[in-house]
Length: 167
Image (tube, rainbow, N blue to C red; front, side, top):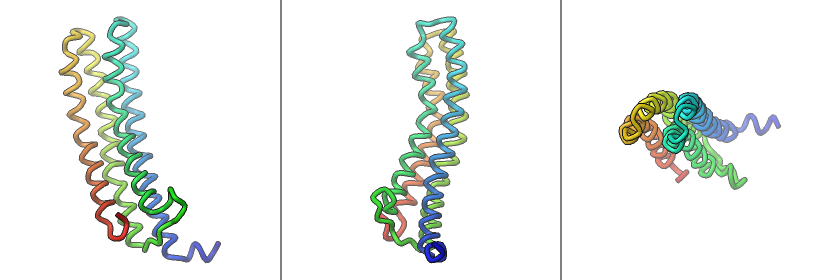
């Protein structure tokens, strides 16, 4: 075991896996908080107006996408490093750090945008509770927050694909 821990490629792979874990954990946490916030508001709206459940469900689901983005980046990292296939890549410490850092944009953008998209979705539920015809407005307002999660996802993907010898 000591031979493995002192091998530089072990630490490169460890950093890459840490980046995948960061992407999933933070983006997933943001989605979880956002979906929870929206769900609380949705429960109140549907208690008063059960016919709005379908619209409420759509607004509640919107903050869940950040977790999906984090999962996709983690999947790319684990696929390109060979972890998924069991044929681990020999990564230098520098390559491992680059791959690990690739999880940061999607993780952080997903965390914060998931939370705030949940808040905007919850406010949108209040909007449709007053006038169900305003569903489009509520969705656009919530989707605007999504933009930054998408940008974090794209930057993370670009980093993964740009690392020499991985793609």
